[in-house]
Image (cartoon, rainbow, N blue to C red; front, side, top):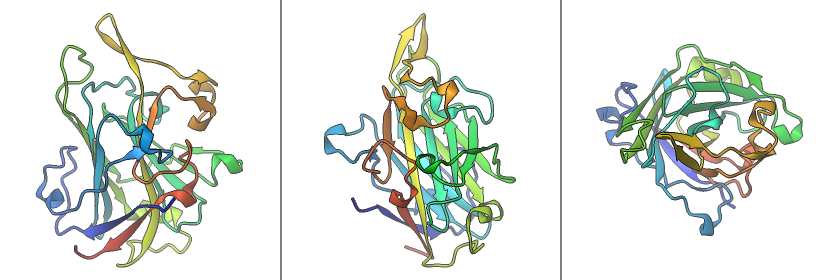
Length: 254
């Protein structure tokens, strides 16, 4: 299964990080392919569209994502909580592409974030390092509709994140940031989408089976009632196979 590749263009002006992706800085950047099921199976086509844009300048790597969603909800407000217990959007970055010492960012529709890193994948005995919060990181969400209101049908939500190079350098063996034109980083993006019920006028997540989430930070240990939609398919239900992630090539212009 060949990894997808995105050409990440240099942005003429910095983006205002408000979550909406309406800033002119995003306008001419290309959309990625639509997300697919994590396994790559064509029989498991996502119910809702997810796509993203990327850009860069001297200070930041920018990621903006658009998530179609008729029922926008969220429960987690605490920073660095286990964010994939809500519907969320996730970013995985391995700057040097060696499958080791990589970074993970997660955000829900309330704008709550979780940052962590792994010295190596869970399947190789990796233990996550929690609270790897980047100084200077900017993030925001924008809801097109309402949130936590089952009586209202929504359009979806969008995310904007600016990752500072001065912090991403921690995950690059050669300490080469910002990247040079032509450099390629291993990256992937995931959307966790839970099944839910509406009980007493509230959205209620249908929980997983198997190991409770509170007892494990490894989502691969769960029996999954949720969907896992990704930019570049992994071939199995496991985001923590970094050598299978997609490729982001840094370019000057289109």
